[in-house]
Image 1 (cartoon, rainbow, N blue to C red):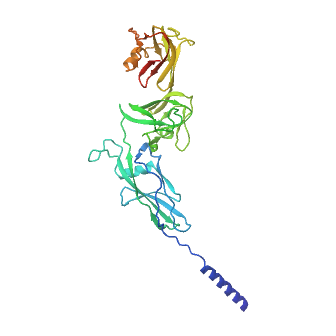
Image 2 (image 1 turned 135 degrees about the vertical axis):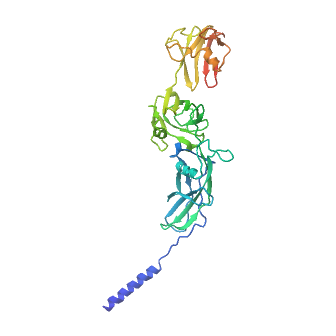
Image 3 (image 1 turned 180 degrees about the vertical axis):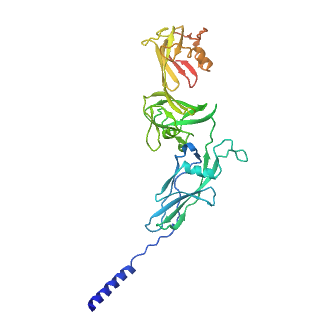
Length: 379
């Protein structure tokens, strides 16, 4: 019995010695601190229309507490530099956090900003721009020990002002691989000018994705398929949701030149395919007939530019935009009245039809109608 008691005491002593000699690791605050590593924009455009978009992804270096431990990062934002009344934008164990436009809108409202052009500051400047302060808080373990704060980063937010429907409204910018002459570039971006709340652009489309932006060069100002669908727009069947993270428009129609029309009053997005022009008259092959074998077709190979090789004699002719249909929309007078500069060998015949009259040397020419530059040339 005594032997058993002595053995038990010995084992207990050994175990106690083992516990006393175990290394103890103690976390300590990060002496070097933590810092943001991403590059911030000069200003961030925000709007209700883009509230679901990511304004920016805040990134930072890893905190070092001297021992292996779980780290919690807390991104804080405030409208005051001293961080009184700050908000927790989000928490994570990762080294980055996406900040949505909706989060920035919350700060904009706290600052008293709005998107109403009629609201101004005391000096008359628009009441839509302000500053938001951000900092990062890192803690070790599950108890929030050893708080470490980053330096404060200040960003400028600008709430895009709304424009009422009328003769003037904001442009949009179309960008994406489906826009064959533009791609994912803002230079040159496809500006869609707006009149009477209708936004349009003519572009060469190929099968692929694209989307619209409220400001050229600002990726956070995107308006994708899901935005318009959510707003109740009827969207052309040749456009589908790309179902990717950006909810792009996906063009699935026949490649070619189309006019994209966004009617914000009717809430429709419509694609209208380009139409050719046909030259008919005594000065051109086929004469005054719509002859499928002889009538010269001017195709729109580049948006707003129609051209074809054509043999001309000293007589009259005019253009028609629907094969087999007579109209007077594309005669000499219609182009002249629109401000076109027309080659000197093409004049008006002076008749009620205001046809083109070719007065140059008979022969074969390349005739080009450029609606963008407003010129009609012969080469």
